[in-house]
Image 1: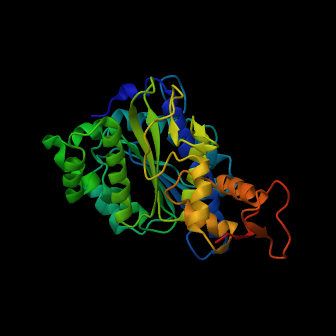
Image 2 (image 1 turned 30 degrees about the vertical axis):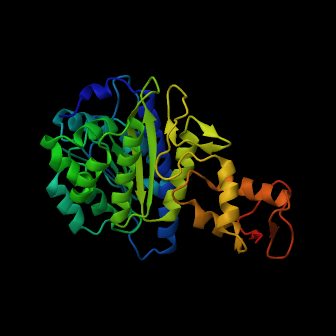
Image 3 (image 1 turned 180 degrees about the horizontal axis):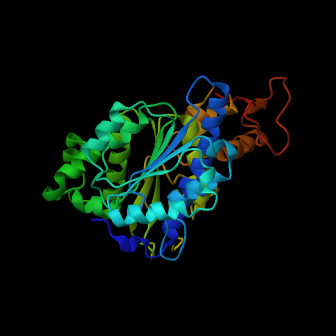
Length: 375
């Protein structure tokens, strides 16, 4: 059962979560709408679906994610004529309160399609429904209290169609405890896969908490990738003392552009960075984590310099091509690549020029700059 005390007040972690999702929705929607305008023969709708939506506001009056998405959409003429908003919460009190809260949003009537609020248990039937549908471009958000209702099938049922991305809350505390608990075995297997769960149980036997977290998050990301979603990006939340992980926000997409947008947003919301490389973490204690998560997620900028010289040794590529080939599953954003390449050029280690043979402008490094690496 969901713990409604969660909505008594908005903790800073919840504010950051809502901010990340609302910011991504705005940028994602603009990208999708721009594409739709070029192809008017296709659907001119976009959707936001939240299956664990809550009552809409915290007790202190602060808007939760559904209201942020709706209020932002009302102010955008393209969005308000295209947005199909679907919310669900199995708690009847939450769903009723959300309906009232939505009805009270100023100028809500400007939305062409009235937001729909449902009161259903998230399970097999909803998964089957999504699997059988051809979805319009959809941003799909899943924020369960624990793990019940969250599954690989649920996430993948939405991601199969063009323009669809998913974001879900991974409650690390509860999932960590549930992995070796036979009473919730079916829920854990739905989340990781049956064979992966068995392998994960063996991996995490008799290891310390830091390594255990690494294996669990890595397994979650790899399970998502195994189902065709190449781009997976986790953002970690520490507890109030900054000592332990409470949960992760995990973004999943089939498209590099979505990955790039979300990485930039998560980077800006991080509380720590090293040499301009973000931690992809919110830590109330502003404590830089000691362990690495998801491949090389906390590598410093110095490593990028060395890695580029090794990976692209003796080759010639545009800056944008270098960035796209190297970026996935690293903590680096485009600015990091430009900074490193600029420094390598200033140090006369690489050669760089525009299509017309001109050197990069002082202090910058454009996407189309052609780079030649030494042998």
